[in-house]
Image 1 (cartoon, rainbow, N blue to C red):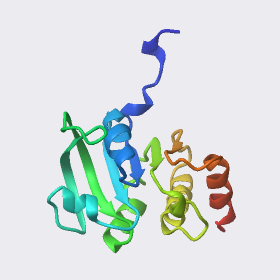
Image 2: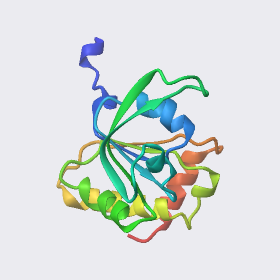
Image 3: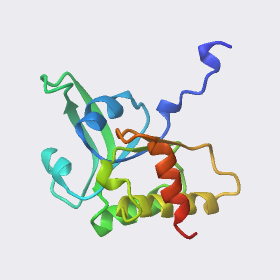
Length: 163
């Protein structure tokens, strides 16, 4: 099999929840398709882009690696905050017609718990995606935290919510 036969998952539409340094400087620059970024609680990243909350569309930002001067730019299709109604509504409605193929979680340890608003919204999005199409496209969920066994923890939290 040649590399031409391999599906390039990084070129698909991505939903990213979290905007920490690792997400901004490593994860986002590796994505090629449209990126929809949702901050779980604050609007600090949105403000750092020179945009006023509640949201921004078609944003470009310069990223750095480990505090070095910015070398490249990343384009974001959308930046919003899940603690604001507009961000929650966008997450739960924007992706039904054209579902994402990647969901990337950049949550801290504090965000990986059953009471996490971001995980409850992710659960709602997954339920909507699974019921909105007779044959939803394949979906990958990546967690970029440093919590041991985070995939198992994430699965147990998401499956604990009632449908």
